[in-house]
Length: 337
Ligand SMILES: *Cc1c(COP(=O)(O)O)cnc(C)c1O
Image (cartoon, rainbow, N blue to C red):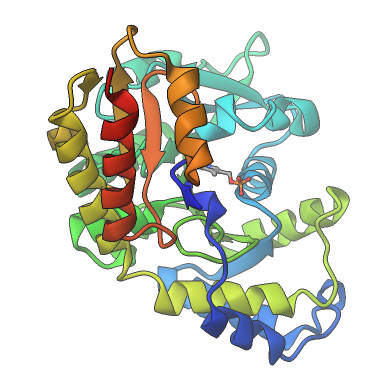
């Protein structure tokens, strides 16, 4: 299978599976799992935070961050396109009694500080209390600049807000910027990381923050049913992902760029390769192309595409340059009248 739908489809490598099999484990709800404890301690230090918590998913890590930063009746500022606003089932409102205040994202994925400032509520019983700004990096494959992150820190300091990063793909951002991960994480009070996307672990995310925040998150994780027992077998995969699978993300970015370039040469496809910064390509299909038929034809050859137009194609460790050539050949064939 050549699966372009998402980097969440990545499978554990034999070496990762070996690390999982031999991981020492214990009951993590008692704090007894040495592999989880090692991952949490290592990850906290590696990213410049006091503490970390291993979570079931990115959605859970973000929700724990929101519930740990905000109380009932608080609100968080975020992008209209933010995953933790648009794609997490309204969890902050449903389970945290926290109100989102979305702001239209700019074309580069950032949020305008002028628009954010005007959305901050005065301290007055009429209003929810604005307590947090949540950013996302990468956002739809786009990277927020370090200069922007620094401005965001200045902005939250000025307004007395906390700053969270939905860093599901923050390592893609670090690789694209060619900086150490701490150059990004240094600006944030908390950060989530998905281990189960391009980093290639089967399951798991991390939330990073100070000790007090992570203690609160730990309580909420239990409440949400995310207290897991001998979960070191998954934490071992997560540690492997963070130590062995980071630098290779550059390959995914190069492959995405190549894919965009090649697609831009095809009639019926509109793609701007200059906009591809990480592992995502957005290609607009001419409405004259029967997208469903194209998808079905490719699927018969083991190539899976997302629905939607523009169609999103994601590169990852399960897709080699040869796979991309195979896809392009099959696509050209399928497009022949
Ligand atoms: C995938 C993703 C999440 C959620 O991760 P899950 O593990 O799928 O719950 C959160 N934020 C962003 C930006 C994501 O891409």
